[in-house]
Image (cartoon, rainbow, N blue to C red; front, side, top):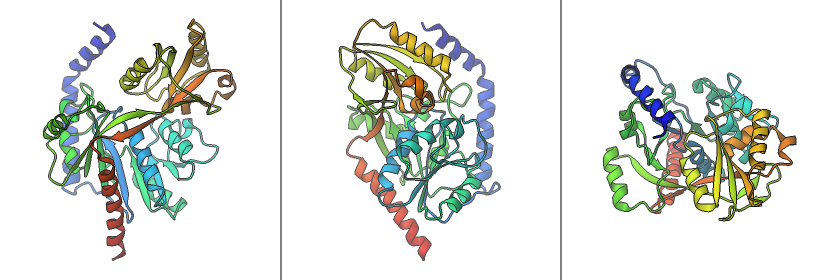
Length: 360
């Protein structure tokens, strides 16, 4: 038995009464919005909302990146995030001097990989959206990252993600479980994506999941799996493949590292891991500990590996990283059952129909 995990689960069960109270508060809040007592605002441009019902680990960032990559070839796209765990407040538009400390690791990841689009953060989206449009009046589509619970804005199209191994139908409210919204809120979504599925998921299993989610007739359900790319050096971009005779030191501060560790176990000889909390801000002392841990691995065929999210929080140590074999493992999503074309069609049809209606 893993004792820390056992005690954590036991502690969360003790907090069950607070979870009940939290669930009732959520129900009351959603009731106020549903009845129009709490007001919501719509904007006169297509807004796509990517979110979930639970905290962390469902794969929002890869989905946002997928949408950016697909849409920016046709439209002027911008993204707006809260900027979780950043050390600033208010609205910020990323520029060439911006750091992850200022806007958060996930928005910084978007900014690094897509410097040609506006990337902004702001806790109050209802204030940040007008500011973003003022700064970038040519914007045609906004992707809201992690704003499904932010009901002060009504997005034109809502996508919610749920982890294959932890469907929202099997979860419970915080702090006993990981739900931060009522499961019934899924009915507001236009599209539900079951993420991190095994690549060999069968049609029968997919149908069983759809049945469990109890989707409405107008809702579309998709299934995606994780794809890992070829790792590259954090500074130079030099490519490096994992091989079965290689030992890996994993540097990881993400919500759900299980798929990543499974991939590394399959593609390298052995691995050691240095785990940190999600969105962890690394220190120079921790970087030195990583170096020492790596040097203690005796196998000459070895590699230090980290995630794209962690990389944007480590890149500030450029001088130290120059002499370290720290590589970044990129991640993307792949649709199962040939669903990608249908998913893209739904998104593009939404945008085109929105524009047509607005022009009338």
